[in-house]
Image 1: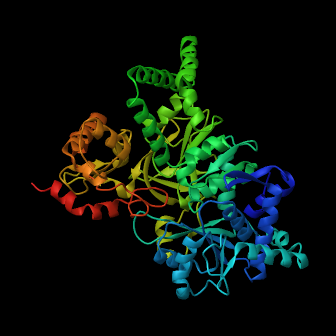
Image 2: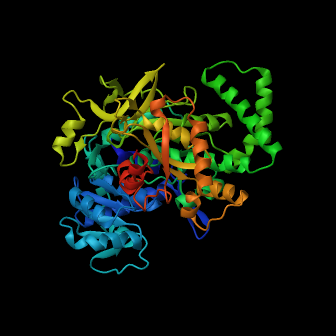
Image 3: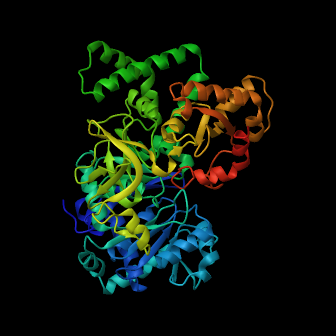
Length: 597
């Protein structure tokens, strides 16, 4: 079905799906179902409320909230007025929030609860554009002239629509595909955030491209837990699910995902590699700490699964003996992993950062397909994605049918098409640098095509050039290291240096258990990683996982991070990417010591 714009796509679900469950959320320990009709009705009232306050086509409205039903309703309400949604990561600091609100010229702000409200309130007097402020959960918030509740906004809308019943639907009819839909500020691993301007056409072209190659159905369901402020979740867990009439359940928090998966039993899952790495590490840790017979059965089952999935990947026939072994392996091992993910999973999608091929292979071996894709905020976001019947581990899949890709002389991936952003808001020079005169967007990623599949080497800016002039892509090496149950994260160092080193984050639970089994004494994480025996353990893991590297690529020395990386302490972006520059600054003295000769 063709849609005029994103709001039209959502509002048409009222007639198409009516009482079908569109959304779920947990309240007082119980999952609450919300029909498409109820969701559209509420969004229409929110739109009416905003309209009654003077929000009009072209205005910007900011949302600062964790994933929840009201995030989705607010987005569609804003879009239905021809206004422009500005998502703000809840983890951002007040100064960063102020920058985005001022740069975007947002006229209204919708916050989730007291924590987010306080950040906004602390900078409110410095805001020149925002005049209306709403909070979804008002507990602890001083309400009055400045702050009103989300319910107030809906009630305003209800009254407004009594006298203007067709206002919102008429507004939707006036929105063109070229109209701006959102300004998404790239969280950025370096520098000042840039606001990528994306249109209704950008997203709808990307939706139609993805749905030509990925099978998503109205009877599917998904658990939403990646930040909706990030383009990956906004596209896949919000617009794509709506396009197909798929049910979305909002996780209580990132910490409850494991429990929520078992409760909701979703058929689809969308995540960044970090979560898959954690699931993999936890499984391996449990196996390694279990009895020898169970270990033997587990690794036998994984080897059987790998042979099976590689036959599938190469589209070869499955021998009867292998099919028998796989059926047995499913009963003995795989089914437990399927149950941990809810038991109904058809496939999972990975994006936002490179996924280690070993992890994709592992999940593929147990019959859980991870479709790794590739894209950027500026490309709405999908450029390529693996498919259920057409996939290659270690790649990000074939290019979407309605997307163009070519490579610059240095291997940088360039892309062109309706998925490419308008530009960076109020940043003409940066826009011209990113999009050339022929409309090609320069991604900043290095890649190659292998048998019709796109393979990403690394970010252009992450490529290490040693003092000897050797080029090294750190991502594949770092990905290999994090497959160790004892290594949580790894950041290679070596640019303009004589040799490579790394900052390593030890995986707390497995390393703690290993140390206790060895009778080692420690009282906290910092003492744990200071133990020489732990250092030797990590060194052996690095050597074990990187035996085939060229001499100039090998990690000659490393420092163990004194604390795990986190969003709160500044080493990770809200989408869980490592901020290399921050880590190099934090561990500057330790790094320099490794190079003292």
